Length: 356
Image (cartoon, rainbow, N blue to C red; front, side, top):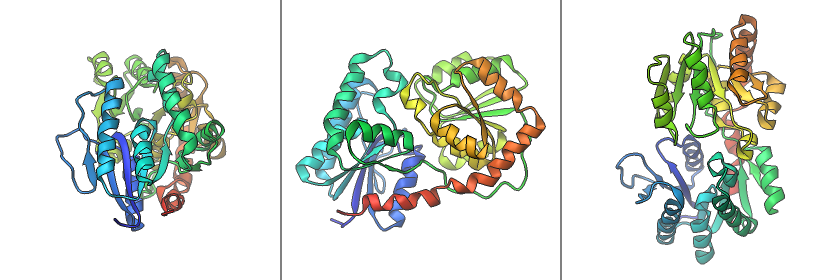
């Protein structure tokens, strides 16, 4: 067994989880040995340092139960001295395996799992995840999360220190020209409840002079796609390999990052798409939530809205038709993008995974 061999455990699809791809690449570069247990959207079997879990169930409690059982079996049969649990949905198997084998356990808190919109109105499921968090998280000493709001939440709730490792993109060549507003909007991310996709589609339906590109899939993908039939200005690009995202962002003038604040998980978010838009040199429209407000107040790389509705979104989009406003924001994107890169952020990651 190699001294620093880490098993990463997630329920995400390894082809599209850019955050995990960056984390594992950074540790590989630092001479760690890594194995990533996850899912795939294809019929691929285990490949390289990936181990694939295939389940009978695709969602709901039975999916999480089956996934954790299969994950536990894999963890018990895979030699490594560290286990990294990515979000609460892999904690049961990871904690039990680490307890039995006495391996170091690291918790990667990407979000407040029991505050996702999908659990609104489902008190029993929410209480179950809260019980898992209360039972296990206070026992994990090595933890990190993606922003200061989530850091405070987890430290206050579970009494353990959390390091902040933001989900930042790799640096790209600086834009050598100031983009003009070509009235192309882009949404990058999962197409799920509360992420503003329905607002963007409604705006595009009312505004045929604007084009909307939706990059990603999710629970509401088919429903949203059905709603947009007959509107050629609404384009569903689906899941894209990481290298294909940047050409799509290059076509756009405005990035959308509008979230329903009734979800505490969204209110305390700092989405990777915010930094992707910044790196691509395009201003974004965001909610006036703490993490976005902190950066936009300092660097003015986008706009904020206070209400989760079409009218507020439309007013922000239309305000960027003013050439001077748009030019100022794009200039700031070009100026400050280099402050928010994975090359800088990953330096804080290595000490977390140093062998104890």
